[in-house]
Length: 232
Ligand code: OAD
Image 1 (cartoon, rainbow, N blue to C red):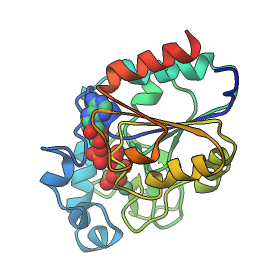
Image 2: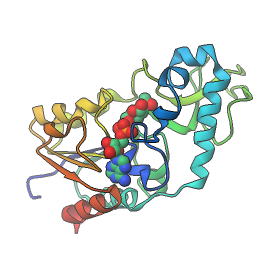
Image 3: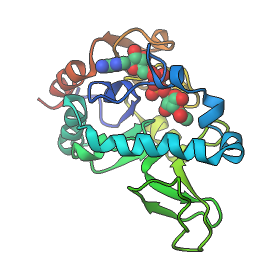
Image 4: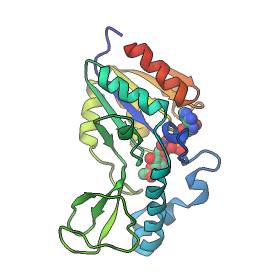
């Protein structure tokens, strides 16, 4: 590990699967039960706001019933103990990294426990349903929406992520299918700048062949073992 200083980690739905949160594309996953174009696009929200708010209200409420698992805890440990730079980027809209103790998590697809005012752009920590269209406490408009990135919208903080990928010595992808860009391209970006690349996933993903190393297994086992290699 002597040559590794700067680490970028990308997590996806697979890291929260053992906590009981459905992934998107596995059998029985969210996109089998709901069509993306019905619940996860700006057009869907314009067409049927009640349906979209209800979908995210249910997912926000479900967070109260789940707990972080050993993989979230291991990454929080790595963040605490790694003596050099580390950026933890998640595509997940749950808050399990934070609840495991990670202090700095970049939510590139937004967060369920945050509301965004479509009128004035203010963000608020949010626990309650949004279906009943509460007014924005900054501008008064009944325009609050989930602070999540929908298909067709630009993920958050891409400049910061690409700057970190350009400097990374190691890029690690955990529990993501590699089906959704731009996150699916991070491995290539990091490798192009000379980083070593490692994938930890239940099965080989769409992007496995891009990685220097791909380990298959449950995140709850693979991630603590890898963290132990790094800081044990
Ligand atoms: P996916 O559902 O596409 O992929 C989850 C991955 O996790 C799969 O490759 C599984 O094999 C793996 N997996 C499942 N259980 C696991 C476990 N216990 N341990 C390790 N791996 C496991 O979810 P994401 O890749 O996160 O975007 O999806 C990316 C984006 O697509 C999401 O952020 C969301 C979705 O549409 C938006 O909504 C914008």
